[in-house]
Length: 415
Image (tube, rainbow, N blue to C red):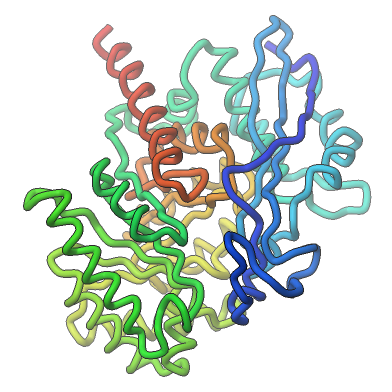
């Protein structure tokens, strides 16, 4: 089976591109958007529509495979690639990428993915990670169609993984509507919630962390009221470095505060993502490691999740080797090729570090479906419900794709 033709189409994502620098600098909210000038290169406003590009592979027998190029909500910060706009990148893909894969034989996903990762543009630069991301999704789908099998089975076979696959716990994110969103996630019995989008000290964390502490207390009470005694989801909050901002980068004070949050959340397991942003990878590894050791020394069980400055496969290996976090977010669009996502999950597991197969609200239904199939094969500790922050849509897409695929795999095993 070969790729006959590659087509491209512009698309919308499930959320928006946000200028993180401007938001952290207390940009004034204006309804659903923000007032003021953007601070990150490429942005024309602090919040602007999320864009994607669908890569459509027409196979020689007429079948169609596809994947979606998408970039994270907070593009252009934390060591990530710049803003990804369809009008800028469709001509580039048509000119320099598509000709490299048209006519290729669909024998091995891993070989095709490796060729995608080694691509260089005419100026010698790597392609944007979003392009690698969408193209490798389409290539995996194409190989699966050539074999008349699922994408999960392609990964299991090519990576020599166990066919004893199980559902992966799903992490549902609320966005700014963190109360209604949490209620939705609780009603649907999400295993992990609510993300919370705590990206501002003044309005969301509190100058002494009081707003987040109150919110966690409310969350625990809400789980009991709506979920009952048997429902004990994990609480995972992304705080975007605001704890360090509120506590003046003082590690002992930050650790004490995190232990307070742990006690407030008990008996629920608590994960705090991005307690600090050290503005660079070496410093981020050093300071997260220091904070984690301090918490463990005090007997705490709150888990630190690494995100900022942990973008590539090599970054993830460095964070895991240093034991800089209890859990590492594998932010799928930032890794480019989905083969890197698989390798990152397997590396974290080998190092005894929690593997969170994440991503961004600013993805598409298609990228979420492909990522779900990856997760079933690689078995991370949790997977993000995406795209969007409305809870229902992302949770539906990931849950349904997961259980459809499990039904197929179970049927084939019995057969």
